[in-house]
Amino acid sequence: MSHTVFITGTTRGIGLELVHQFLEAGSKVFATARHPESDALQSLKAVHGDELQLLTLDVTNSSEIETAVSSLAGQPVNLLINNAGLYQSRSDDAESLATETWLQEFHVNAIAPFMVTRALRGNLAAAEDALVAMISSKMGSMSDNTSGGAYSYRSSKAALNAVTVCLAQDLASDGTRVVALHPGWVRTDMGGANAPVDASQSASGLRKVMISIDETQNGGFFDYTGAAIPW
Ligand SMILES: NC(=O)c1ccc[n+]([C@@H]2O[C@H](COP(=O)([O-])OP(=O)(O)OC[C@H]3O[C@@H](n4cnc5c(N)ncnc54)[C@H](OP(=O)(O)O)[C@@H]3O)[C@@H](O)[C@H]2O)c1
Image 1: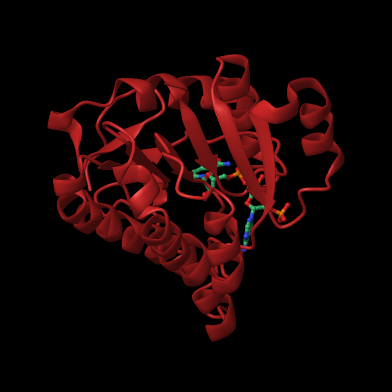
Image 2: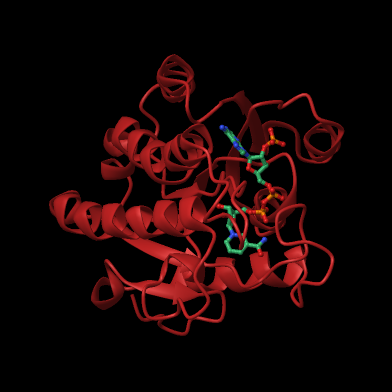
């Protein structure tokens, strides 16, 4: 049976690299993006043909979630990667953070991963031992927070971690596992030029972790090397 992966937020950064690496490893990939016509995705499509399906999906748009999922026509999904993310808050935003910024980050980072997972629940249950990987962040860890700031990002990823633990329990009866993963501090538009890890290294580590998650790790929080992260 083919290994099918569904990934959100694939135009650039870690998401784009995950698409590339799963295709190279022989998976069939549904790469979703607000702009699937992007040059980077079209170049991959030219190489991989039908193994790469490009779907339009703004993860905050419920009708686009419905349309994207119905286009799969019930086919099994072995791995859902909720990767799309937004980081608009700043380390010194205690005085300036706007409600709208906070709501947008919560929507993309915490609510949308739940909505996408719920919409794909039947496809995941149809695959044996499916996995949902929430691309979270150490910045959502309470124990790792020693510098404050970044209120909206930190709290949205902490909320995503709570969603992960709930879904891990609720989807266990379907045979679907759910974990939160920290990709490292990665050189992308979000991570910036000073980040020590490149997108290829992060995606390669994440892929290895995803394909080796077992039942005992369901509901856990791990980094791209497989090390457990305290909540
Ligand atoms: N980079 C790091 O150091 C780091 C560290 C910890 C965690 N993370 C997490 O890793 C994930 C990927 O981060 P990255 O560094 O690759 O970020 P990035 O380079 O900023 O890319 C973000 C991706 O998410 C997409 N996206 C944003 N809002 C979306 C929406 N409403 N609907 C669909 N797609 C949307 C963007 O699409 P557009 O091109 O359409 O905007 C883009 O493809 C995020 O969840 C992030 O929080 C990153």
